[in-house]
Image (cartoon, rainbow, N blue to C red; front, side):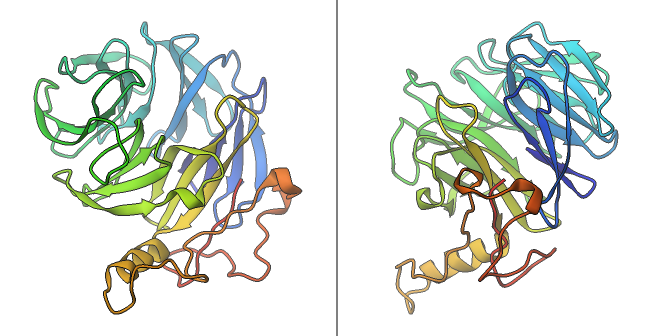
Length: 315
């Protein structure tokens, strides 16, 4: 999922209407976009400069470029792509996990460079380039003994900082970290699939806090999108093995931060008390119609910016 121009774009595994477009304030479904020949969707991002979406297709080994009006073009990767992001130059970064490299392309698919990653960075899945030119990369594999988030030098050759190691459940461990988001302060949000949580790291990749815990997910978190302007964190909650079961849970960063501060305050203790939950989720499979928007009965109405109440729904 990604946001662009007051719309939230959600990628679904379907034969048509794969991209659902929601109003970012009301979460009402506006329309859908069909991407021709999309066979093995993996990830999606957007570019505010070119006003388009980019979707990686692992089956076809390509990237689909989709205009906001639905016009789509395709260019080849010649490797199996995983996660995708856009850098400060408005170029596209496609991670190729099996090849252990990042490929940089222009918006229309011209190859800028191949960035080979260190040999011990096995199965990278997502990368984001910082303003310094360095990269934040997450990597793991079910059979690999190292599950980490790394800061990599701009040439891709050197690991500057890292967080994680052997898989596990401790605060400094991961169980398949698959996706990242980075804010303007270069703090890093990490989706930890196996541990069903989202972790926040400092710019030097030290543990700050657990941003979203497992009790907020019905299935497993796989993707995260940060909207700093609206102070919203969007997390994809997907069921393994069922492409039709999934939702997007929307959290207020203000509420999450307030709750984390409360937990760290010795005067209030560490219990997550009822009523302080930074998010409650609604599920379409339980009868909620996406065309009606979220049901906020008994709760706050959605609004932009910092709000004292959680603005949370499931799409």
